[in-house]
Amino acid sequence: MSNLITIERHILEQQKFFPEASGELTDLLNDVAFAAKLVRREVVRAGLVDILGFTGNINVQGEEVKKLDLFANEKIISAIGQHGRFAIMGSEENEGIIIPPKNETGNYALLFDPLDGSSNIDVNVSVGTIFSIYKLKGDDPCKASISDCLQHGYEQVAAGYVIYGSSVVMVYTTGHGVHGFTYDPTIGEFLLSHENITTPKSGKYYSINEGSYAQFNEGTKKYLDYIKEEDPATGRPYSTRYIGSLVADFHRNLLTGGVFVYPPTTKHLNGKLRLMYEANPLAFICEQAGGRATNGRTRILDIQPTELHQRTPLYIGSVDDVIIAEEFEQGIRP
Image (cartoon, rainbow, N blue to C red; front, top):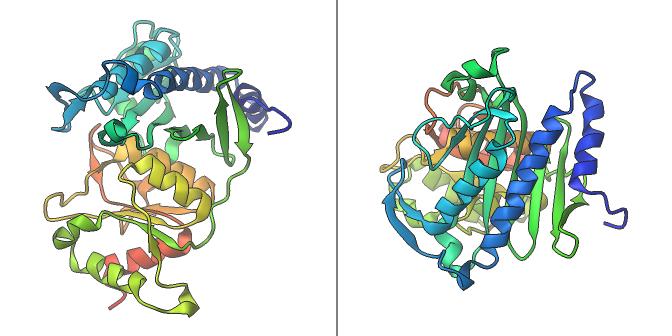
């Protein structure tokens, strides 16, 4: 980070890829970075204030709401919505769409998971924020509707995530490579630390919740047996790395190589992860870094969403590793 390139400067430089750019997307990404700073401030001091534990409420996903979930959701909506650059927003914590107070100027839709992995926050495990940005279908922001949110993943104009761990890192793409920035609390800025991230074609790690093994289909069970076999020629067995925080697992595999698998189960036949808030943005990032993301049969970015909180299985990471997982899921491998 010797050149001290801030995320704001980097985003401005990315505008050269968009000759028609008005600077609006640059402002949007800066808004997201600012919101991440607010969430980061509370995450790192969560144990010092009354923000740990549950609120006593149940969200649209049927899950208990953590206090920090609620705080992160409110802060992001407030910090981003007040500028009027987004005409419409959708959050994993809200049942319906969110129309910011000043929607007369925004030409974009924002979808976000305010605090992914929040079940781990009470035990000081890394959590994150995931976001996705789409251009409105129409020209009138005042007519923005849910259809502007339910676009194919390949129509994203930007996506990213922030991981709150031993350091705070923001990773984003606008369709021209993937770049990571580490937060320097001494100056209050995200500084370029991972330029042009490229994920390895294959890795040595697999991330899956093996506690649900009994609920997996035969293809998933055979895949797990395969990657645990001893075979030096193919780099097996793989090592398991599963944090239970999607952002943290994905970030590690993006940098070091590997595969994250959240397959369908007998309890969640359509998968459990959210297409719009988790799978689509991470798939966009993964592909931009040279990786692959599917639901086991179809490219994630090609799925036509039908609802805000749609769920999907997810196979994401290094190309070779994802293809092998897909082959077992589809029964191609015996």
